[in-house]
Image (cartoon, rainbow, N blue to C red):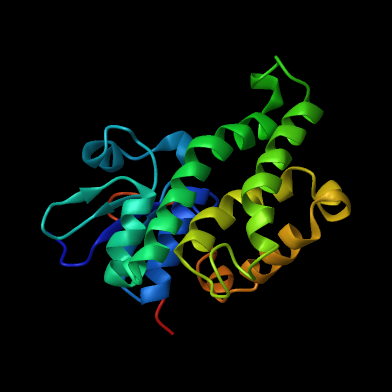
Length: 214
């Protein structure tokens, strides 16, 4: 059994992005296995019947299949100190995952959600962002305070996807505070190191590691 944790990932998946950010941030080293979602390897199914990414396999046999849990594993106690900020961050992340993610999916894939028009899906998603993200950015540089924290890293990949659906519209009409926050996040060094491309992993390949050693 490998003594290095194994991370099944997909470069553009926002859940996998948030997990990789936490691993990169703490400079933990994992063997990374890039997955093609339409052809998931049997090894992924064997450790996670859900077949979703990210999945982290630890040397002791423990398997973590939730992106937020992988973040907390990587960040350890740093993610929970001070405790009042931890509670705020977890509440915001969970609210985002439960409420905004479905709105984002409907906006990205309107053909699957025909009860509303694409414009209405856009409006619904933007309304949520105004009420729950932009109001925070009116008071702070980042989502909780003046520092880039767990909640920023966990939520930013999804806002990045929202902006990418209609980039011109986002630049012209989205709240400037939201645009500025996203731009700051995307300037983080992670988006050079953590978004590099890896070839599709197949059984028998030589191990590839993340973060890549210089």
